[in-house]
Picture (cartoon, rainbow, N blue to C red):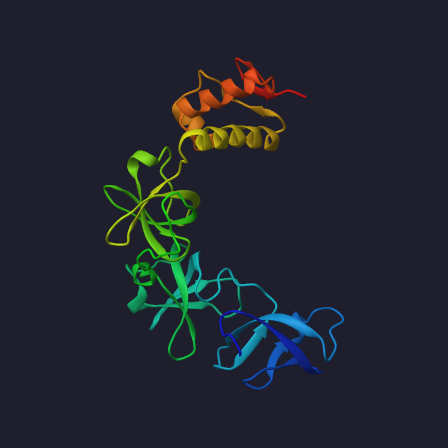
Length: 275
């Protein structure tokens, strides 16, 4: 079965001056010659993204778009036309965000968080009305689970997030050491599953797990920064949060443990990983 708006593994049926013609349930689909893998021959399998070109013909490309059908992405506005707004999603043919799927007028150059979907006409389109794609929590989730988060809006209470690309959740302001931006992807944990199916999310694990995670986070950051971080127990909470997304209390506890283990040294300019 052919999946429009997604990746497909198709066999090259024939090749001519235009490119490779790929066999599919919907007939042969052209992969333009400039996009063919080097050394491709009839009979070879090739992974391609399938979409409709400007003449509504099924077309294949080896270029990877910034999102496929069912995925969320921050995309840049290219132009406004009579039926909506064209977004740059990495392919030659731009992605249409219909006016009916917009929350506000779009201006060229601004970025908008959208979900890519397959319209009933068979065309691939985008929607900025994200909440209609969010469903209540189900039995696949449990309190304490680690989850993927996508920040999509803000309220007086905190940041609204899409959990595991499917469910609705809220990160309360008290959880946010640094305010995220719309489109930011974070890692979090389910704090509570509410009766209405919404999720309360925390960025922190609890107890011993949390302490171990803080320790590993500081060690990882040190290794990534050539063994030095310009932070110590005198650093401001803001400086620590900006570098590590961690509270000052958690940071001091983590570096205290690492110091006792003999893994780091502490100085006025920061902490260093011992050789």
